[in-house]
Image 1 (cartoon, rainbow, N blue to C red):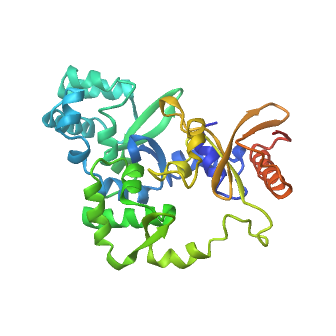
Image 2: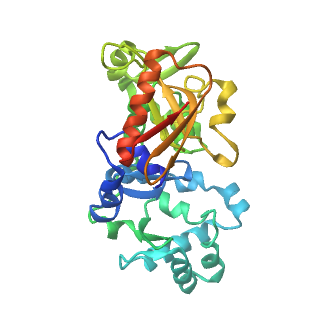
Length: 339
């Protein structure tokens, strides 16, 4: 099971792994899409969210002359590639990477077609991020790609001047308070100046707030709720912290450039590991307080927690056990919890 199922399970009450909700949403209902987007990494989005993202994406700014020199392509190469891919996928049928490379070779030449076989996907990602295609249903172990406007009838891009402010508005609602640098890191863009310009367009919708020694931005409509806070206590009278078991690569720990409010700087190497690996994390009151792993056996679920310090006071232990039981319910297995 992929981390996306666990991410959805951590956010949707009562979800079961056996229900197949995520594959059904992707391949039958088409209410979710899987696509390269923020930071050039794979995400699950609703079609409306992806249209918003793709509409504000600036391919020329992101894949600029320096990037083109590094990957030995030109702006003309990219334009030819986009046209060839759009034509190859025009009938709405999903193609594997090999099939897409062959189709591009026939239309734009072997040099570009062969480049689509790269495991980095460096020439696939620009096309995906501008909205040309999304992942299609897997064919065995192979990923397929399908043209977005054929897979999602009615899919259309928005004016960039509308999409840019709306995406930043949604980011602040999910991750605020935050800085322009935080948003640029989350989005995966190089031009912080462009982010500041979009922030200015939100006008009085956004207000500056003090968080420790930092001056950050939040939606003005959210400030009262943010100040009320609750410190991450549970919803039943604040008896203890909310504890969550988040899977590897969870978006919660990737929303900011400055992550000191989430992770003790001394513990960062245990969370943000080499080669871009993001560990499964234990949250208590919104902060990362440990890592965890699980093993699914035929007759049980084993969960092993490695806390960063002694966290096992009574309320925290009870909250951790309840969260592990949620995971066991998700997998429909009895739980063995080790701490």
